[in-house]
Length: 316
Picture 1: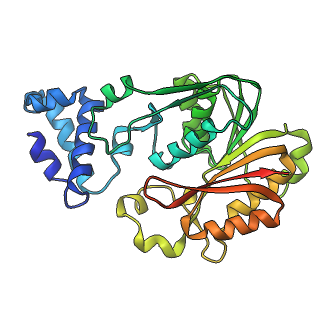
Picture 2: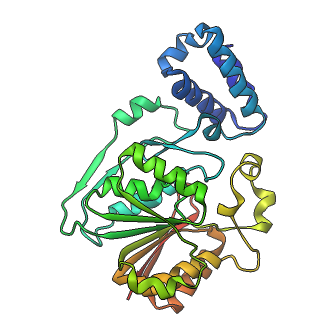
Picture 3: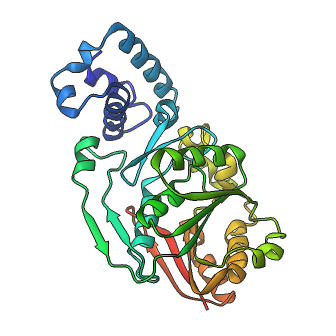
């Protein structure tokens, strides 16, 4: 099998650029091949065992199964996270949310903001990691308490814990599978994160808040896709990624945002920050809801595709 033949097999699902990136990533992560190796034709020199394994991977890719689930890892913020079908695959957009948090000087935290590669980059992943740009900011406060609600693979919580090493990071999820996977990622990446099984829709959280720490920052990438949006989704997402982490009812698209914001009203410290990844279709509705809940300094940012994707609000 040659590289050209491999990526052409995926063009019925992906455009040419993404098909090439996927095959290159498989060859890199699973078979330790650099872009130079691929250009030199090393794909045709794989052992019989590796050729068999590669063919099995290609057959699964041709059926639309996400490459991250097949390989078992996803790149996020310059690190590799273990992923399984029980958690969402970390997206480049969510990296942008982390960057916004890390670039914020609200709490004067120590920050290391790095440019990390995306799945579709044409550069070799290993050389990309070696060329990360770093921006360091001097600390004035180093003990911030951070909460990530709906942690999934743990990508947000672990990234913040590693980039803000003196902070105290806690992560919640309702899924036992997600908590298992996230805890495994924290251990393998050396991050100090406390994981807890919590349902943010459970009203008992409001009676518990007095016994919990007051948070300096709460962040969440909650389920925000309405059921009616399914028809516009890619099949490889719809058929393989967990619906529990994706969808909200059509008649209540702000369900999780409302619950998290209500909790944050009582659990954030004064002038504490609330960060969300959001559905662009409901950005204005969410903005209005938070204003009615007395949040201030609300700002919305666009993602790399020009869509309103992130929101920051401050508790009075």
